Length: 360
Ligand SMILES: Cc1cc2nc3c(=O)[nH]c(=O)nc-3n(C[C@H](O)[C@H](O)[C@H](O)COP(=O)(O)OP(=O)(O)OC[C@H]3O[C@@H](n4cnc5c(N)ncnc54)[C@H](O)[C@@H]3O)c2cc1C
Image 1 (cartoon, rainbow, N blue to C red):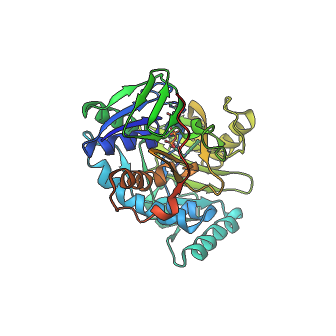
Image 2: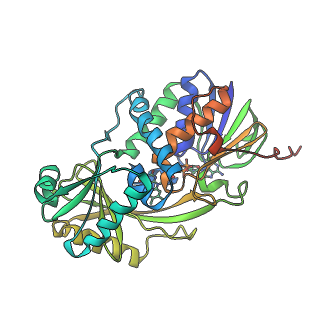
């Protein structure tokens, strides 16, 4: 089977790689550089956090996320080179005066989950897990959470796709996907099936799609060591800190209903910096190595969707759950293409409309 894929971000790369493994021929079209990847995939902190996300979303996202959490280690083990993946859980903490926020987080989680998906840690237990957070008196430990080194993952997926014979067209914007055709600056190419994985770039084809602006900051310091992602509850800001290679941390993220892609604002920069300093003054001398902005592709209810239009499948709406949900989504895309039945979520994901009329 010969598949054309528009968009070389998270979904596009994962689909290309899995389809090549199934013996398909794959051609990947990316508007930007495949090396630097302009998509949200590279901006993301890449936490795989079904429990934390449940607090602000619904049970469907949690169930889908738990399914992905099982697939990630199996899939990563199939890459030609290892990619750092940490599945030792995450922490949520707050200063003593904001303990109410932490209790509220725990209560919401328990209410939505119907069970305890977390453990309370006292100061000594927290110190044993993360010595640099020992100034906090309490924290919630969420064992079923993970994160992946997404930059290494995107690079390795590209290397594997190349090694497996995938055809790559970068700096090649796709203008239209019509049934089994991809119209791009490369010309008009015809396939057995085409996949639209353009994230927010698919807005013209999916009028309900909206971009949700997210800003992040990268800092580097040897003064703080963390093993696992940490969320910090504060009355004015919500913050997460995710360890990255080379003594770096990604700090995020704002969530603004805007499709503005311009640089991080002064206010967001101040808020992220203040919250980080409030987590630990040991971050004071950290160097800000970069800031980044991107758009999370979201549909009406912030749920993902696979829209089937004839031989064209449009996979989108991963919102802030790209790493949380991508394996589950890709499994469903492959089920549809290869007529298998591995995915338990097909009914929730699939929508069908008439294919776009093919213009001569
Ligand atoms: C600040 C921030 C933090 C995040 N943190 C997390 C997190 O911790 N955990 C998590 O699960 N998710 C997180 N996400 C969400 C995650 O990044 C997205 O859900 C995910 O990247 C969406 O994947 P995608 O493949 O649909 O889109 P993208 O990753 O955006 O990829 C789309 C690709 O299509 C390309 N493209 C666009 N238009 C065209 C065109 N016309 N022709 C060809 N190519 C085109 C783009 O250049 C891009 O490479 C975060 C997002 C942001 C912005």
